[in-house]
Image (cartoon, rainbow, N blue to C red):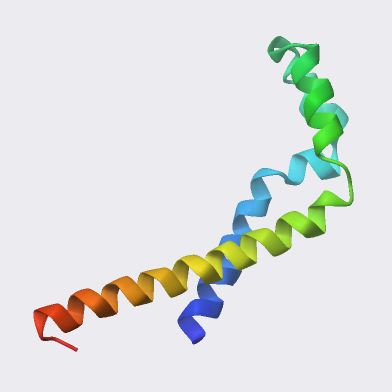
Length: 84
């Protein structure tokens, strides 16, 4: 179970990719002017401050689900191979 929780915590690191959008959006978008105003407007509308905790929870839950799926698949193959 520690592995599953650890994988969930590890996946929270994915949130770091979105951190510049929450901490300093103006500077982030100033370096992305070539993407166009539609990109900036769409991303600003999507990445509201309330989405940060939702994104953190989703990262953790998807990490836990991935670990559980991986354990199940590995167990199946280990049993089939006669190891477990």
